[in-house]
Amino acid sequence: MSTAVIARCSFCAKPNTDVEVLVGGPGVFICDGCVRLCVTVIEGKPADAPMIAPWEHDIPLEQVLQNLAPVSAASSQVQENLAAWVGKARALGGTWSQIGEALGMTRQSAWERFA
Image (tube, rainbow, N blue to C red; front, side, top):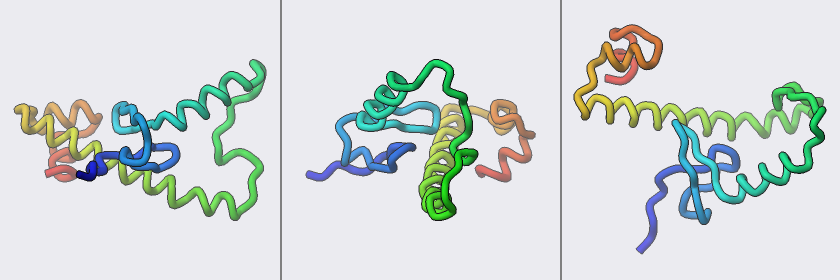
């Protein structure tokens, strides 16, 4: 019996079927392998290292272009998760006004986007 792919790691894009543990947060997931990598990076990071966004690093165009597809895939996964959460809210009796307010948009905008 094969396990269904429910979600992918938001960092490495491995599906839940290819990792030992996939931890879920609000619309994002991280696998055990990426958690280990994060711990290694955090433990080895100098305390005075500046925080800069990944796209602000001095990297070649080829690497930037390689990152576009994974970033787009992560965005798609987040949008699918958001739609699923909105569906759950509706199934539990949430109104479009409540959903819109939670998302910082009007009732009409929420309905148009998710109905």
